[in-house]
Length: 235
Ligand code: BTN
Figure 1 (spheres, rainbow, N blue to C red):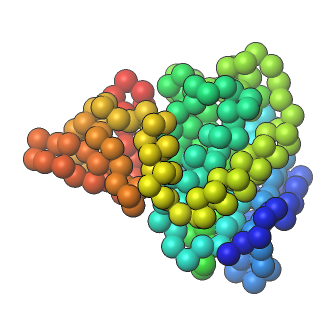
Figure 2: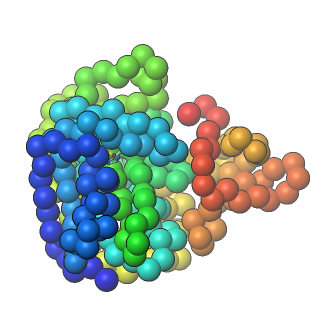
């Protein structure tokens, strides 16, 4: 189990902060938890094999935590990031399953969790100072600047999220407990809404203790444990 506080590394540039930590883990260089932030990423990666574009307006960071079972860490990570962003953006933030952080129904932050040996690498991309977005994503993305009309020190946001991780992971002992699940459910935008995946369509009813989304379809209750879930009226 890792010790807190996390070791911290700030890089000028890197391919991807997730790839950076994965290399360190593979080279056996990681003995405690580690947090890394990069001022620029040349090959940022998103969920489901997508690329993640980043610039100086974006916070790119990753945290590696040692844990035997990764189950639930993805959702615990969403709780930690949301809590860290609250101090800048207020308490109207929500989670879109599994771990997008939304403000006003638009994506403020994305999280990519990857498993390497006994570690989970949690990569976090926050739209901090972006003044606009590419037309393709403009109707579904937002930034802290667009929300609050002011610019932020990206490193300050990094520090706040890192601290929040330490608190949340220590509080729940790296486990998606019943309390963590209840908190997650109270923040999750999916519930009661029509959701679609490539395999099903129905109403999101809740999540189970493993963190899977429970959906009521015409043929009964189904669980979705990975992949893309579109929420009707959001994205
Ligand atoms: C998503 O698809 O929503 C997840 C995006 C995660 C992006 C972050 S930026 C820092 C870290 N390094 C990466 O290559 N990806 C994650």
